[in-house]
Length: 447
Image (cartoon, rainbow, N blue to C red; front, side):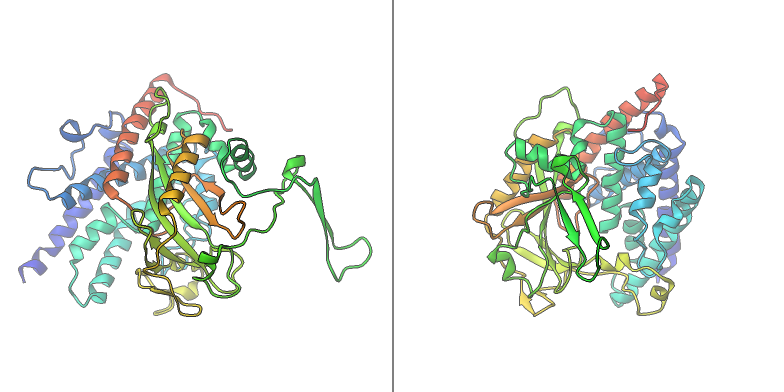
């Protein structure tokens, strides 16, 4: 009874911390002062104390990073982005097919202006967090804590989308304040393949033919002809031989499955301070996910996401994030769109093929490959999401398809302490650069 009575007060306290911390970094003293760590921190909310457990300290660390990056999105909003004309343009582009599960409304609708985006953050964040915590309470048959879940969802969200937003924000800030370091050029697929090939990185092989001509089988004369000029000849298309799954990968997939990759995320401490020369040990592999493609799918974007233990290579349970991509008002109907998903898959659902518990061959070799590739190609970029392929070609048994620099973990597990400590150190540097840019009246130019 006492817990029920105190619930509104705990919810109000969490909400006050959210608004207070957000405005502290948006317009308050946190906007114009250094981002300090430990006992030197001037952040007035969620202060760590000696009685905190390791989990509580991690929660408070995560919450502060979440609030800083959420507020700094409005600083970035109209400023140039490394791959678009502005951060806002990149937001609209990337959120056009993403919706909070059960709403059916693309999130791009709410970021088309800074005012609308601010109103959305201030209203939808607490509302969605409260609804989600109550829903989870019912789902767990009243065993979960509404206030605890509300605090997690609002202050330190651990869903895949929130980590994606956080990584994108850090990449946007880092590129802007460091005048777009050369490593960001790797986002261009052709630059990545060309530079990787020059530096001995095993990238997916490409053909040097000037181009190809494609003819529709049912069009006559000069109709239905398409010309594709190869990037090697200055064109816009990358022409490659088909890559096929290795036997090990194929045996865990149904027939007619697409090329199925492993998404590995790495972080680079060399991207924090460019005055230090990149060295071995600067890059750390955080997570690995096996994207097991669905039967008949064209790509592994339609897949079951099996977490991989980066220490052992043993595959864990599988899940999906497809419920975040369901658009249309029909998805608001009860029972239509699931609000959550768990790592409950032990088998690939297309054929009931056992996957969980299988061990990935040479996980250490895969992780060392991406760590060394990050160090060679783009040590000046904070995060890289690598699409790694195990192939059936004995000449290239493993290769890298592409990199994603505003990347997400695809529901993979990772050491949160290592990740959050890196982010804290990065934000100390970025806030100092931001204050310097303010003092100098720096004008940022589009690429």
